[in-house]
Amino acid sequence: MRQIDHMIAGGVRLPSARRGDVFNPNTGAVQAQVALGDKEVLEAAVAAALAAQPKWAATNPQRRARVMFNFKALVEKHMDELAHMLSSEHGKVIADSKGDIQRGLEVVEFACGIPHVLKGEYTQGAGPGIDVYSMRQPIGIGAGITPFNFPGMIPLWMGAVAVACGNAFILKPSERDPSVPNRLAELMLEAGAPEGIFQVVHGDKEMVDAILDHPAIGAVSFVGSSDIAHYVYQRGVAAGKRVQAMGGAKNHGIVMPDADLDQVVNDLCGAAFGSAGERCMALPVVVPVGYETAEALKAKLIPAIHALKVGVSTDAEAHYGPVVTAAHKAKIEDWIQTCANEGGEIIIDGRGFTLQGHEQGFFIGPTLIDHVTPKMSSYHNEIFGPVLQMVRAPDFETALALPSKHQYGNGVAIFTRNGHAAREFAARVNVGMVGINVPIPVPVAYHTFGGWKRSAFGDTNQHGMEGVKFWTKVKTITARWPDGGANGLGSDGANAFVIPTMG
Ligand code: NAD
Image (cartoon, rainbow, N blue to C red; front, side, top):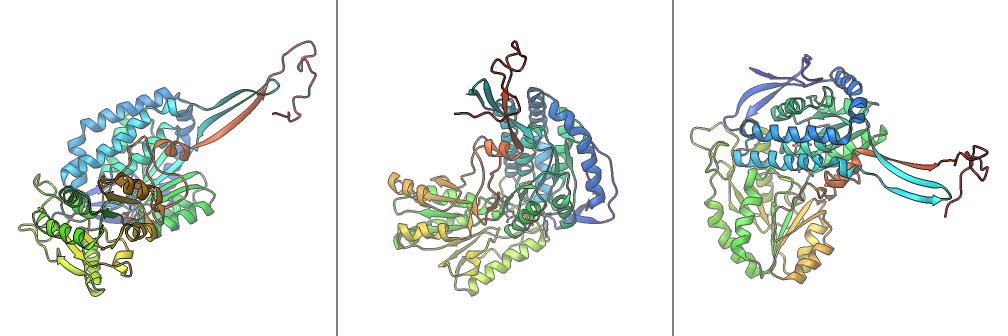
């Protein structure tokens, strides 16, 4: 059986007695075992990080950026290998795996510009003979804890910016698809990052707790489900760390009566069912405004959903592949049943779907449920599968209130031809990322990613300038240089230790 180990100090192998199974969701078989590390493993990673980080921080930013350029080229060179590795553990189709890695690479491209964004601010003459300037310095050691659903992109959201800023970064990826993170660590070394600067420790809650409690780790970036995000946020902050913790989502797509329904149906098929719905920016709730819109949309959605092909990840024709584990499949199917029990009308039922030749794979067919209401627990909670719930709204205000009042506030989209409605919606909706005729409004790397409400704890987003702020501390220097004149202390004879008055 293939064994997946920690990537410490460039490949030191540390044994871990505890191991977790890594499945191939296409076949249902265990394909590897991953080490589940503990405090001692983390200690080794922290020691390597402490040894390497000061020199890395003192390396000029342009040289650090060159490592990022090299890394980008290496990831591109190995794109096929990485995408197949990713698909075999996650289950998403190869095109989606390439997209996963590509979105991460865009953050690496942003990190290539780190010399520019690390430039500080300067005020000449803030007081008599006084200049004030600020600089951004790395935190020191930062950690990233990531979910299963984007094992390429999310480690790079965090790691690329953290490393480019001069930190040592320790990644604790999901134990369900741990191979791509290890490979990224190898490529980072090959690109020229010193040993100890980008390391991977594997594990579960035990390793997460060790990270949260470790005094040498100054910042923790987490992405995963909301209850765990909240826990990580509270425990990390209590230990005096800087923490950003992104959580779950239940994104709504509002369909106005004037929307282009063919385009909406096409967008929904991608956004609700693509990657088997296992995306935090998926659109699992559609809100048609008005009875006629709902009926027309449903009539177009049904044949489009029936036409979706579910297949193995390597099937280039497949729209989406299996979900990540048998346990997750069971949970999704339970939610479908709960929704039906609560009064939802199942229009298309994906339960019981089997793929010939892959009967043990973790497949679920696309599911459409109509007449879902805000009172239902299946609406309130994240299902994270290929399930589209339709919540009908009589008017714009009701539609606007649905995502605004929902416990999650990651993303939302409105489909309309009316600029005024779109503008009102974008301004008033209580959600962090908004799409206007864009179903999955994931911001580009030089903007910033982050939701509101229970979709994010902490106040700094991922990547863009927010990422740079998260991975650095600002130091502000107020300087006065005596003129070295006759009395040697400055011509006014002022005592350099008295706080000067400015303004
Ligand atoms: P998860 O919360 O189960 O796991 C995330 C990380 O936390 C993993 O590294 C895991 O090992 C660790 N973990 C699991 N249980 C833990 C515990 N009890 N204590 C401490 N750590 C623990 O999430 P997942 O199932 O891997 O990923 C799916 C979730 O992530 C969904 O809720 C999805 O919406 C969310 N997500 C959010 C974003 C975002 O940016 N908001 C992006 C991607 C995914």
